[in-house]
Length: 198
Image 1 (cartoon, rainbow, N blue to C red):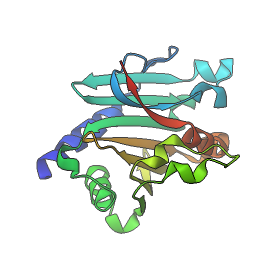
Image 2: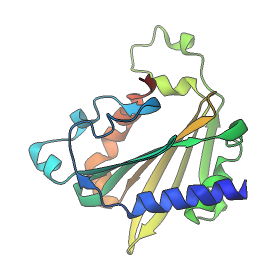
Image 3: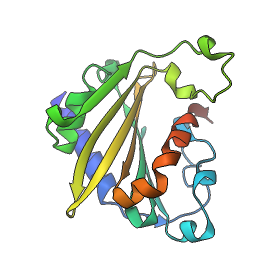
Image 4: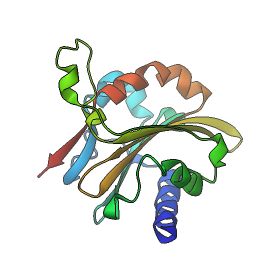
């Protein structure tokens, strides 16, 4: 477990240091296999002015994938990690410990809400858009971090699959980012879906 956490720390640190390359349409299009998409992500925020200030970066190392999008020069960040989960050792019960180990945040300052997964049949008659991802065991984690003296609010979403893979989606925003994108994060969540790409 310690070796696994160390690997996560290295991956997460590299992702946070990346400033990204110029944004291009569908920058995660080359990812194959199981992947978490945010459908129509661009629709929520991209004016031509916004696009000029957005950067994206995609790193693929075997089965591990790190996809980062920086909005408004980094005021808001969306990071999607696909990581191996041997024997499904990482789950909603211990994810708080993992986040604390990777971020260096005191576990007492991390809020965790875990769910074993929903029966989608219960939502057949719902008029509202129900996120496809909630059928998977999942957890939501919130905490604050500081970067160069600026406070960031972090909303992390974890989804655990039966394929010994889990997805870590981190939405991180400073105060300016919260003002600009805070209301659309629910739309991002509603349109998250896990798909199998060929």
